[in-house]
Image (cartoon, rainbow over all chains, first blue to last red):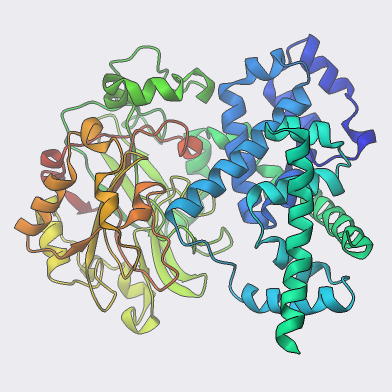
Length: 187
Length: 334
């Protein structure tokens, strides 16, 4: 959950979670920071991330026994958060106008240009990421932050490995494509 | 794949990771006590703000007894009774029935219904760093008060708020009663929360409808002054004047609410029409209890939801009302 490989290795707390059935509080105290990191990388907004974390915590509270029974509690927890994220985003997209934060449209425009030029402006990239589908955002962070293999990404998202690969490719292509489109329009 | 894009993604994610780990709000979100807050803690938290608050009491006189597990602030306040023993008054959320059970069992729903006034609109929800805050108080006699905590600028708009703002005033069961799209509509916030602002006691739900029909600024501050009523998948019923353009008639057919609340969309429409209150359907109310409109939106939202868990972070176990009961619901100013 938002961890580099070395961080995803089962910690003492995680191991304890599996064998000694610790409370969720103990687990979150030991591992929760990684959860918040994943939430922010998915939502790209600290308030939405806080909401997402709370939603995930609620879900875990109800199903903590399942988390403990899972082969990999960390993976279970991460899956809960990702599912909450995608569910929440789907619900919003189905019923609400989902807009970028105020000023983001301009940021996107700027971001496209920035990608064309240097691809170094993180804030602009952040705005561009907001235009991606939830699943695309999820795979990108799992791939480029957590360095998860496609097999793990596929398992987390409940898709085939090939699908996970194509989602990553498509997401990157979309980011690049926007750049291309914008560049063409500007000519 | 662009290597530069790849690198920038990694850098951005690393930045976000660091940002998240240092963000106190995000860290606080991990607190399970926050997910099921101790009411006494909540009240203590907001107690310093109470002196400046005007309390709007929403006193439920409903027959169906709710399970309330919090909000106790004194010996005269406490939980209502429950007909479902498994629902402990202060039990952890994990002890609640499975979500599916709630949806499938209307009896359980009736006993565990939640009461909430929700932030409105959702997408432009106020942030926790506003001056606005509030809390709900439930009493042993099944009454509840909503304390107005203040008014001010919320996300660039003027507003005043009642209810539990512990979660920072989003749609997570928090309460935002009125939100004004234009300061001109609320010359002075202080005026807005004065007793003379509009609600006199007692104000029945029927009177509230009249209130709406009259275009009173408390509930009809937007130029159109129209009113929305919505029910839907989250089993909420809400009435709100709004400028939201998110009107989709098809939404009228969605959701299990009629079966759960005993309140059909038709009943709701009839009530509003009988009161002469213009209304519109707002699809967003069907899922979040709040509106998505990006334009300035004003309104009072009365929402009920037996939706388990979704808005439990604030801890309220609240009331499920029928429309008839709503009509008899007095609103008072303490």
